[in-house]
Amino acid sequence: MIPASALSNRVRGARPVGETALGVLSIHLDGAPCRVGCEFCYLGARRSIGGDRSLDVALLAEIAATLDYAEIAVAVSEPGAAAIEPVRAIARVASARNRPLAITTTPSVLRETPALADGARRVSLSIDPRKGPVAPDWIDAVARPLRAPGRELVLLVTLASRAFADALVEGGLRALVELPSIDRVALNALKPPPDWCDRAFWLRACARLAPLLERHLDRRLFLDCYVAARILGLGGCPARPDVSPGNAFRACVYQPEPDFTFADAADLSRRLEGFAPPERCPFEIK
Image (cartoon, rainbow, N blue to C red; front, side):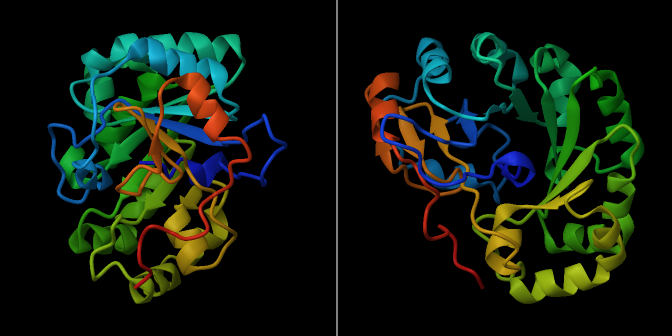
């Protein structure tokens, strides 16, 4: 999901000791794969997380109150109702600090639990065939009730299979980008990428999508960090730091292993002094 980093998370270098500059701070309420179990989900590689994976709502609120971030983004898996309490706790802290809150989840979750969007300045809907119909009319029907003053609606479209990727290139992506209820669309590579999702595929896809990219790139259509920074060389890695249950921190949300585990919010803040994006992408560029 972090692809939201393609929209606003541009870490601008290390800050003085005692401060952190995390851009978009991601919080995954699941430390491991959710019950949907998509075989391509990067959370699937997190099975080796050690320690307590229980969700400590007070700790997450303390982290939200302590760290220096431009935006805090909470990823919610199914079932959505279980996430209402921690999301509201984080939302209260973010609001008190005047920091924007983003919620990333599936259309089905938000259709069943619309209260998850309360207080969110950005709502990102995760789109691929495993998470529901990739039908513009259906997505539009879910998105319209979520529109609110000052709120941005984003589709995070994941290339879940070669067939789905080909369908997007042949016109499916244009239909999503042009939905009037949607503000932006982010196109995501799989991480780790399968053999077909390589540099050659992306160069061919960008050539086919050239008219759409010329009109909408970095306005209504965004490429995720792996594609933009690593394959096409459009800017540097924005990072997407991530905190998950089990007191685990990752400098990149997509990497399987945590960089370290922390004792509490103060310990995490201390260890993030002078934070900078990773020098190497955790995934091979094929």
